[in-house]
Length: 391
Image 1 (spheres, rainbow, N blue to C red):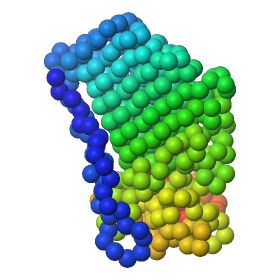
Image 2 (cartoon, one colour):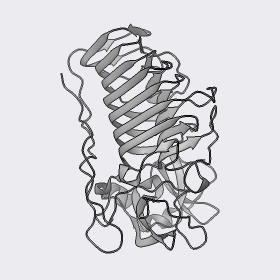
Image 3 (spheres, one colour):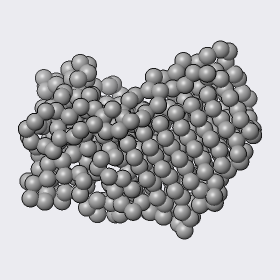
């Protein structure tokens, strides 16, 4: 039976800022090949109950539930409901899979691939003492969360997983969940491309992260107040971002996919977040331990990386500017020569329907209509991203 590529290995040598050779991408950051279905399609009506081991043998599995290719958020019925002790492996899903997989106890989800996600791809419902393991799998196009963790007192293990274009890879229970329950999660060997935040965790829960690789991703881990979507202040510099008692990781656990941009950067450590790691004359934030030299996304759509260094206890620009994408199309579309075309006045997200259109806002920032994750509430993936000149 074929399998998708795993994300494994350890980080490479990292520079400390200033002059010196450019850092190379970590050996542990490999984007897996998306698998091709094998054999005849399996068609499923409604929800299939799974007990024991279900081996899909890498066939395409299509249902008749909500069509996730249109990004619907109202799905509640899963295509697979897995009993305590069950396993689902070697499955490539189609689009009409509703709420994906529901796990009702301890279960294993291995080598499953979702090209589109509705409300969730996988949901953990098992309670105290139960563990759901998701491994060697891939997910694309989730307008909000991909893996939802509801079960009080349960554990979710996520390893060797790829996620592309999503609001979040993992979210511990938010709206309507008990503020006293405690959920545990571990995430290891994750590659995220075009994700708003890899992990969202409530402050009564705990997520431990190791070897997280990312590009075009706004943040590694963010904390929320229990029982809702209000952000907490448990993270770095009084923000919800970065390491905390709930988001447990070090700078060396994070790796920017530096091979996506020009080879100039001298670290691959990802900054703690856009609000917790600021450089500037008036709003620079205090440096976070282990993140003294780090990179953060820049340019509309976060197609570039900017390196910042710790100077006298606060972040300052390293002088590299916004190091842009090696992709020829992206480079051309975001080039300063397009500024003359920024004739549209941007108000909220109106008139953003064509990728790479240019505009400007009232604050003097240039705006580009880009495919930006984390905006699942809009009718389209296209969102105006407005930033000061990045060139």
